[in-house]
Image 1: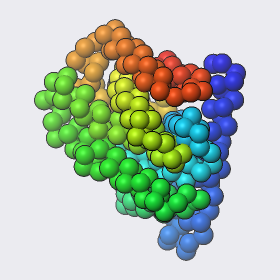
Image 2: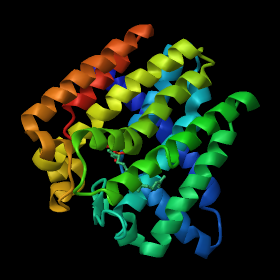
Image 3: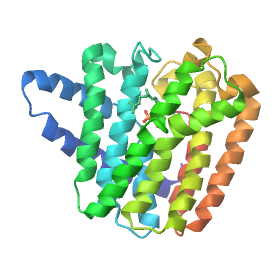
Image 4: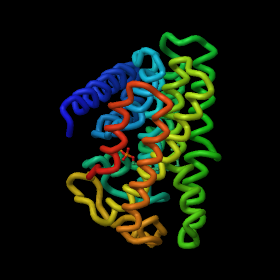
Length: 295
Ligand code: GRG
């Protein structure tokens, strides 16, 4: 990994971690009963995710001429919602996975009722967080609208509904639509929210959207490949959970080699979309890092 890139990645994820900790300090001070849910929230938030969504928000804010600090509440809100989705995704009524981010899943560590509530509370805290900070009320409203759209029935939740309702019945086109919603919507929101926080115009926001559409599909296809070829220790979760559930994935429909080629083509298209911005060395490296990632 290029040293400059690694340094910047650590800087941006460190900024996010510190602000997430501050947000959690406000929640951890409740009574014993409340603390159990707060501890479950913190357990999952601090379990070692890659922080890709907040990093995208902070960096898109910077390439649009904004101060990443101003986008930090939005970046943290995205990570809270992402963590919320992972907690719920692991529940027995969803994918029923026992390990996440290298640790027992939230419901294994805290029990199902607390995990369910920890997810709900993270969604709530996400909205409280995005309402804070120094941006104008109008900008915050635009950020909230973006976050809501990405999370809802036409975004991540809708993607999960299709994933569970049509398991075993999807062709490639339906699968890619589902990926765009389930995985792509939040990544798209991350890029667009960075632009919005910087006060960017429609042209830049559209370019960020195009970048994220391509990145989101490549990201999920790589996720599918890692579910077959990955190292469980690096991934922090068991491999084969999708193929074990007999779910269609891009790999089960197209094979590993074709999947790698498609992820590469999508990555190249994402890189082209970055031409609309200046000073994109870090974003380009990040895009390539996500293609080559092993976790
Ligand atoms: C809770 C809002 C909400 C919705 C519930 C369960 C569910 C509906 C949606 C599931 C969404 C989901 C889990 C999508 C998978 C996206 C994905 C590839 C996750 C892995 O992201 P990484 O690699 O994970 O960024 P880390 O751990 O590094 O953060």
